[in-house]
Image (cartoon, rainbow, N blue to C red):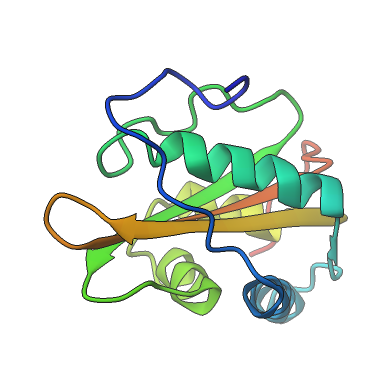
Length: 149
């Protein structure tokens, strides 16, 4: 798949993106943006498709080993991975970025004021040990503005 990084070592997990997930993703992102004085985002269908491609590509690697490899220029990306008994949701991903359990850069990308649109996707399925979930949010335009405090 173009734009998803290297090939990886296993098949991609199945797409688990649905309307409820996308509504939760947008709601969670905009709630955190509002708390930091950043304007709300809109969900862009083309960015949703790109996020699906990114999530599938990332799931070809164990954990988050692929990082942000292969991300197209001008696009911000926040990624989340979990392994457990059940599939995780958008609120889990945003809480992880916001609470600092993941890289601070993921939260910074979520809060950039220049961003006006987002896409989100989730893939999930049985990994070697347990259920794995990969969640990707992408943002455009990325801009150079520092994230709000």
